[in-house]
Length: 294
Image (cartoon, rainbow, N blue to C red; front, top):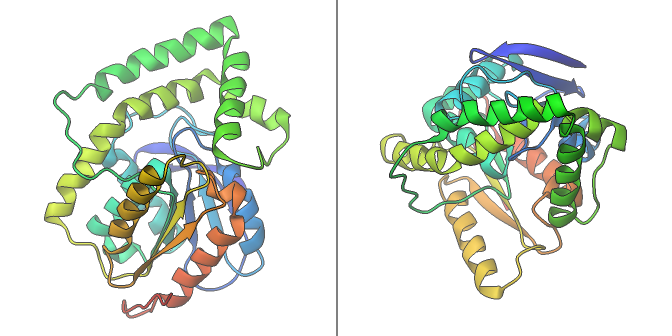
């Protein structure tokens, strides 16, 4: 079921599917992603688990955001969606969406039954000298409006999407070209991608500071590491170690390395995503105790 809901002071498009008991899986895509990126994994989960895939403000079919992208804003959105879904839930976050998902677990552990991080962004000690994301967001939106006005958005957006997916997956897009044009032909989406990219370092730095103040709860945690598009052995080892550290945030955490998957793991290895969600949901305990065995 597709609808738009208010969450965190924003309007977000979401698609709810599936049935079954246990915690709901709340799926959020990476930079520029859309709800349908999760379709292959959701197809595997639909007969046994309820899933909600949503678009952050300005992405997919969500209206443009009221507030600029930030860790604080995205945590508010996640928290409201989790509460509405019947918390605690299992956030399933790809790439930079891992930042607010982890922050949610630290700030609102009562809302999180467990966590699945899908080839998550990992920054060891990010620093930001000058915060520019809030100032750049209006410029990005003006640029998106210009692309809409000139109809260039219909060309630039879908072409950009095809290029990114070609480089980050083995299988390509999972939905018809007409839907790609409908979503990525919007100037709002292009503007939001630019604004989120501008906010990336600030969000990473804010999460780094939060880690010093708030512990990660002892909930089940699975980190999926994609190595199919990591070109050098040194980079592969560094990426793997960074994800090992994320998995070690929880005493009930583990890492799954996927040598054959590229960054869009949900397209290349939807089975690995579905297995991780099932493992975390199964390990979660109603009383808050959990175990996630390898």
